[in-house]
Length: 557
Image (tube, rainbow, N blue to C red):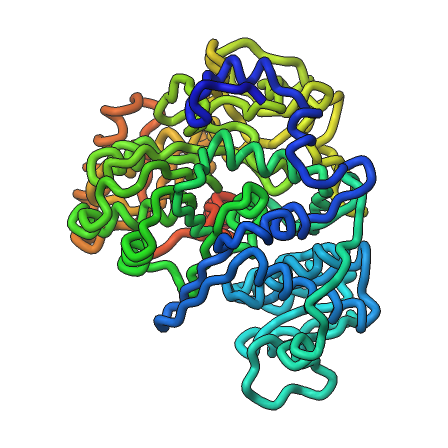
């Protein structure tokens, strides 16, 4: 890592050229070669500092805080509990819990015992849970009263169930986690593992098909820490809040693992997303460094500048991940929150790899995903996996041989066609500029072909969202016998506007003037909501398939 006069200012090009994997590994307490434990890296090595590691607040007004030392003791109790039930190194422990202290203790305790933690998002239904547990072979699921019934509908699998914070009689065979932990010792020697051993087992978001198992080895700790330092620019005096749910990669990687790796406190808010509560928590806790998804940030914008005024000027850095950040969001945050919001790109399989870095100084282009995190090299490839020159659309790929921080080696127990010819293919179509920054065009199957033009849905969506009537939008290609496809937009309106033919035409012309005569939406459909994954990513393929089905019905009529 490049040493600078100020730890908070660093030239990107210098940092990128000077990246040293051995120097990064030396920042860990353990050794990736054969003696490392994720709980030691995130908790134990800071236990003597007396610092707070975790702030928790519930929607009903309850709150708590825990020091690193307190979490060390609680993780030891959980690890002892696992050992008592025959669960140890390499076994999978799943958590079906909301954002509570029990969730964090489950994660840390599993790591302490050398086990692998698997997140189960609480919005999942029984079949989604069953698919993930079948993939992992989890030996234990920790849940609560609100989610317990879902496990009764999981078929053909054998696992133990522990209920946390339950004040009601438990079903026969369930383990009362609180009672079990109370009887356990607060000491447990962390189980040492190798860097190639797993500590997380994730699932892809299911944007384009059934979720696939993503093994995450301890080697990934270096990448997670680097992102928090260089891209999020997490400083010792920051109050950090990542509003992403730990049931998903961005929350588990960077609301749990990342900040604790740096010895920094993290925060859980156990409540559904509302604009009012988001601003209240930011104000109450003095949050200065915020991370989340564009979906949440667009809802802040929809609520208007009056709501934002209460925290204007408080946020030093805001990071956005999960889907491309529309330029209108960037402008709005600058004007009404006086805060820089930067787009960051990654995947469950990679963590974050291309970012507009808050700490590393480089040119930030609105609408660009940014430049590679030091330790990664990316390229734009054609259909033959050859690298393309600047300003030529192609698939974004990670150069495996020249990306020492890359930790993904393949999906769990199934083929990985995205790894080919020395590259990991992201499946996202992007363009690269001369300065190395990349701009999002769309998923490979989202790109629209109309009258010979290739049109990225993101540009059209970004233009639409600039109109004050539009809260959210998704753009897809609709089959058309003359043009192959036409651009169709599904639009969610602000409460201040009502659907009408006149408004649809206004939106069409609005985009046409901002983009081009071929890239505007020839058809607009007003909807109440857009299809999304539980993590908030747009599922354009659902809308696209809907249009294909409608076209076939019309042909058969």
